[in-house]
Length: 318
Ligand SMILES: [Zn+2]
Image 1 (cartoon, rainbow, N blue to C red):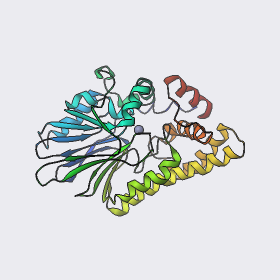
Image 2 (image 1 turned 60 degrees about the vertical axis):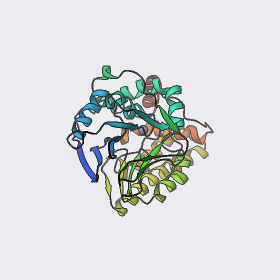
Image 3 (image 1 turned 45 degrees about the vertical axis):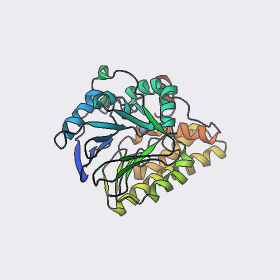
């Protein structure tokens, strides 16, 4: 029997800080959640907050080797605990997210915290340092532009439609064509779709991401995609993962099969290409469970609790 989710993944990952352009930083970590930062003329915008303030402090220490400017904005791409619960370490004036992200934190933030802590304990360095749920202080529905000052141009925060969650946003630098895509795009890491809208994500939402025309892309996990070809490949890989799940789970669903059958079919179809990528085994039971619901007409993802996580895992991943 496989150990639950990522609970036995306890070896530290190497973090790599990349400078993508003048004052544009990405920290990747071999498939752990990525974070980033964009310098304004006299402030910094940080993208994603990590799982705990202690984890975030280590990232900020590295960033401080490059800039001493204060963090004015902390941008949260979506509500997931490993992306938001480190927020207090940034001392940001403004915490920005999508309207739906704020609503999701209110609706299910506590359950998600407990669920993700159980699934990915290694990411929660010193969980007692988390002061509570993270509340965005500025939200928007479509687009929010931050003027970076000087000749640095704008940072555009944009909603591309429902995808990985109901409230994902991307951070886009039109001047340098660098995109922070959050979990809407993964580069050589498996997708987590347990809170997703698969059909929207695979179609219009990824179309909107692709239409930006990025020349460097920082996905939610995995290496930075450098150059148009690598960006297109990351988006295509994300789309193919979703399309394969839709085809396999959809076929079993419409033939009157069971959730277990659907899990077996989707796993078998995806494993040759994606099976060795980070968090593949961890994600698949939750992914198939949500897609099964979506195809059964369950409009919004059901709330994951620590207890439901274990039930679904025990039902499918043995
Ligand atoms: Zn996520």
